Length: 241
Image: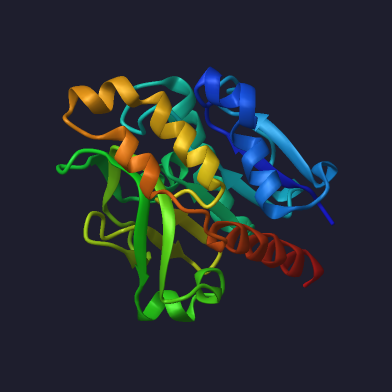
């Protein structure tokens, strides 16, 4: 099988990566496959991106950057994303990746008017989500982890919303049955979520949030790993066909 490309769009907080590894490690750990099955491209440092057709699938990670930042690498990555569509390669965008997919294909993303969504959240699949070949393996209502201030405001033409909650109506979408965006973080574990909250403690306190309460609410949930393993299976099946 061809490798899965992890387009790494940034790094996590140093104190988090020291203990739990970085964004690409979390993805590989959740999928539970040999690391040799993956290739990492630090797209935030690289304006020369690999050819999409050389991979069984592509995962675009989250980032501390915002999709609205006027950074050359973000513009370059968006152009590269457009080239993927013709190859039918399975693509999964997480958080920043989710927003950039939407924006690249003609939708819009910007700061959420409600501010940041952070911590242990509930997500609901709609009818399209229940039938989707990626998200359809999950329960209709499931818990996940969120860590975002920006959001998809409008979807690209022909994209379909698959899941949402009371804070964000677009927690997941699909385009052309092979490109998915997830606003929540399937690669997080409960411990990583807690570490992300701790890393933002001072900002949370300034915004009258209670980080200790948020940490106490976090539970370990299996759905993220199940979802990423299903994406890996879709990539494998696509190569076989």
